Image 1 (cartoon, rainbow, N blue to C red):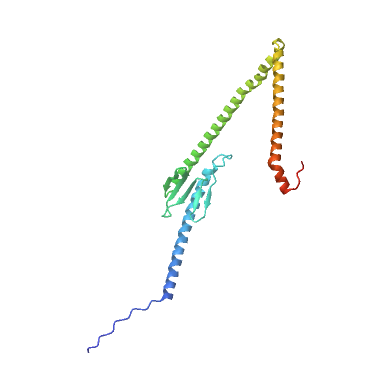
Image 2: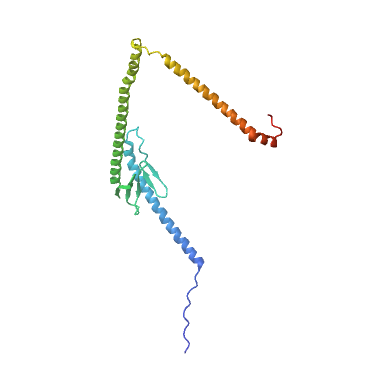
Amino acid sequence: MDEKPEAPQAPKPDLAAAVRRARVENAERADAIAELREIELGRLALLECELKPVVRQAPQDVDLFDLTLSRGDRPRVFLDMIAFIEMGRDRRTYRFFQDTLHGRVLIAESPRIDKIVAAVTNYVARRLVERERALAASRETGEAVRISAGEAHPVATAAPEAQREPAANAPYLAAAPSRTVGQRLGDAFSFLLMTLGSVTLICLLAIGFYLAWTLRARDWWAHWFGPPPF
């Protein structure tokens, strides 16, 4: 009567069963992610179809836009190199971004395709206007350069005529005065002094070499090479 019933023992942990449960949960989560990705790609593909007529209305010679659906880790619909549309975290909201020098800017955000299409239409129009302004500015710059070159050309052609005028009047110019006898004697005296200075320098160098040979170099030569040559 005094014996107490034994308490039920806790089940021992089963690692194999835990691994099986983890695999099942992982597969279910992967299936859910894949399903959400397919939904996201489907909505972006639908948006791409709605945007194709807008991009096709751009002039044929304009290569600014390249509508592309990217199927990477983050699916996106690219309009050009700096603008794209992607889905929000809820996989229902479209988000239209543009990369600028000051960072990424959100242009439009809505779950409705028609609002995103309108925002993209306005964006394409602005890009076309910016291109027209850039082309007009480049044409004005080119015309200014041509006008400047045309104004500089007469000056360049008139310069040789101005240079030919002194040559035409050359017979009327006074002849240069001839050199006097004193100037010629001064030149001759300067040449004589230069000659004497050169000869004096050569003599001093020869005397210095002889003294060095006699005092030191002769003994050095005899020590290392034998009898000196002189």
